[in-house]
Image 1 (cartoon, rainbow, N blue to C red):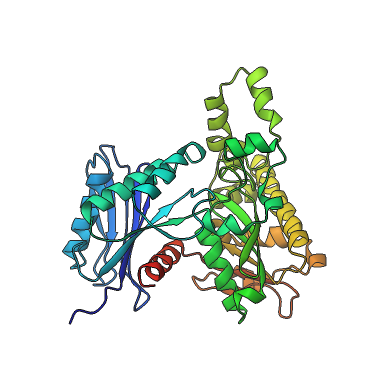
Image 2: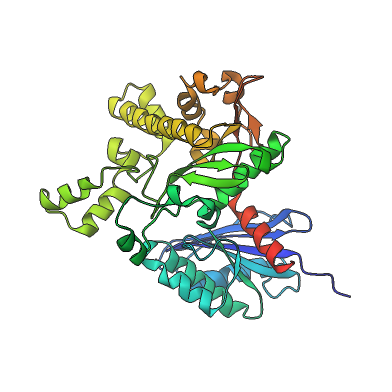
Length: 403
């Protein structure tokens, strides 16, 4: 008698890339991880690591014309390790989908109706949803008999109350064009907020957490008893914190000014705010390690960029303290949040009145494990919690297909 399938393949399809992980949910372990990048270029690259066999990382370079070719290459790599997509142990494929609007509040089995709704949301996620759709259709063609599950970045934030998700613009216009605050990085915020509660030895329903997801993209969320009540990103991932190449919060009249005075088109303004702003716009670098190196050498532009970045973080920490009323923990996560001790120290500096502080020795420790970096007995726990969006997607996918 064949045991129930326990494996989940997680796919995160970008416009020119596919990140993937194969996990065994019965044992909560990764069997393989990989990345295909530069799809559609002559220098496409696939990096595959077979964790189940303990084998060496394999790298393949050469043209991959499209996502179909990329996923077929991924399937071949998995098959070479005895983990092929035709395995009876494969229970489902879980897809990261960036924008689910208000319709999708939980993981969803993908059919044509669901795909059409994801397509309908392309205007509010033009950089992400088309790539997600391509990955889904390709995976469906490879395994049409297998459940394909969409896990939405926006879903965790659909619990925001109306007063937090609405913009103060004409209601009829907003409703006609689906203009509201959706929020993003939801799988990360969900995972990290729950993991932080566990670190404190409490149930998520008992804990109020401010999550700071700090990577090249950055967002903050206020999570009360396991439910998101506010988040920094809005209609798109442009709103909120200063990011690697995105401006974050900005007076909307800046766009009118640039059009009228500088003669810039909508597309040019879009590119400016999304790709040539944030840290890279302020100092020419979006790598926090390089910015810190330049600061140590006396670079004033890098120092100012860092100060603006930290100032925005502190504003959100204060705002979300007010929103939550009681803060039990602040959790730093993602590439910068997990690895940049100077960012964590600077963000907490001067917030002792809010009960927030870091212990210098604890903050300096590098580890892949969740850990507290606040002083012993601090009123607010400050934690570093490595995010695991792929595990979160796999868990949600597996829970749905085994329900």
